[in-house]
Structures are given as C-alpha cells and as structure tokens.
Length: 311
Image 1 (cartoon, rainbow, N blue to C red):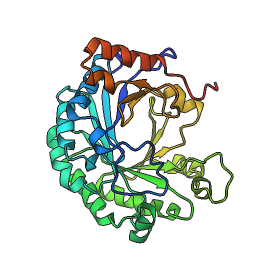
Image 2 (image 1 turned 135 degrees about the horizontal axis):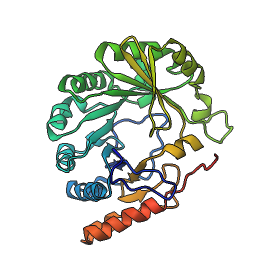
Image 3 (image 1 turned 90 degrees about the vertical axis):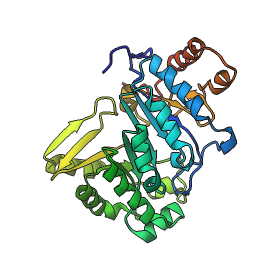
C-alpha cells in the first residue's frame, strides 16, 4: 500500500487527501464551528477538483475523502465524484449529514464512490431538532438505509457523544447499526481551553474512556488501525464500534497520514494549524503546469509540522 508514497520530514506517509468541497450546509449543529464561509460562486469547480486529485495521485495519494459543510448541497456532486473516480484511487469516500443521501446514493455509487460516513447523533426526533436546528431525522435515516441498499460499503455513522444530550442513546444507536450492517463511530467532543460554564464543549464533554475500557472487556475481537491514531475497532455480536478521541495529542500527530484542501483551495498541512497553508487554486486558475502544481503539494508536505511533538 505504501509503494511510491511521499513521506514528510518526520517520515509520515501521505496516504490520503481530504478535500472540503463546500462549507455550505443545510443543518446548523450546535458543535459546528462554521469556519471561513465561501460563497457557492467561488467554490472549486469539478474540473479544478479533478486537477487537484490528479496531482495528489501523482505524488502517491491512495485515498480521497470529500467533506463539507455538506458535500451533497452541491448539485454537481455526482459529476465531481465521477471525475475523481476516473483517476482510479484505492478508496473514495464522502462525509455527509445524510439529509440528501437518499436522493444521491445510487448516482454516487454508479459514479464511483466507495463509501459514506453519515453524521447522526440521535434517533430521537426532539433531540435531533435540538442538535441540528432542523427536522430532518427521517430524511437522514432514509438516506442511510439507501446507502446500505446500493452498497456504499461500509456505511459508517458518526455520533458525537454529548453529556446530558445523547450519552444515554449509545446502546440504541449501536442496535440500529447492528440491524443494518452499519459501523458506529463514537466521537468524543473536544474540550476547549475556556472554563466558561456556558461553553458548549466543556458543558457537554463526555469522556469515552470508561466506555472504551468496557468495550475492551466485552468485545469478541479488537483491531487497531495503524494510520488512524491507533484507533481501535471493537467487534461485538456482529456489530462494530470505533472510538474517535480528540486529536490534539502526540499519538494522533505521529500517525497522521492526511493532507487537506480547504474550501477556498489552499493546501492545509495540519488539521490544527492555519499558519502554514499553501495557496493552490489560484495557480490552477492561472493555468500552471502539473509539475508546478506538484511543487506546491510538496511545499505543503514540507510544511507538515506535528502540532504536538511530545514523545
């Protein structure tokens, strides 16, 4: 898998590229940061996204993930996937809130999408409305089941666990996932540095450590994902759970194998930093050669500095 893959100066292989193709969204989740809004008329075009993916392929990237916002608010999402899939990556995935997934699932599968992650924090309608400010629970569930039906495998549900909001629903969500052959990813809300009692992330932070300890004891099997922060996969009665811990730690940095593209077309070497971005999209729009664009990618890789260098 690592043949012909570029490594940064810390010998971390660059295996995947995450492209934020929009930061527009049709929901308004409590914990979302709503960073750096870019209007639809300035979003990267399908051809520009193809060029970015082509250069990534040249330097050995194996996997592409499309994210947002919500990627499915783009009416050209199937065209985008089709163009990227023509480059024959090992894996093309997409993260969505699922609201429009029933509409697009078959087209995305036919275009070459391999799998989807769907953000769903609750199966309770009132809680869903509270978290997202929308009443789209049934649409999201229908989208998830459609993704399963058309074979966007594996379908994963991303559940952000929040104290006093949905922490009591983990069992119900796991049962739902078991019934439909879906992987459940439980995501720990990141605590902020603020001590303000009104701060959402501190008020509703729910440590997943006790649950992870329990899962270790009751699981039929436990596997560790080498390039994903050492994240563990727990197999229980034909079901599968992953625990996603906060990323501001040395273990995450040591195993980070991903480069990112921001919605305004910049290379983002580090998830947790914005002071080392590399401008890319203007060079594409100016008609620069693939060799020149590759040099920009290499500059982004050279700029990769672990946010946390402990150990």
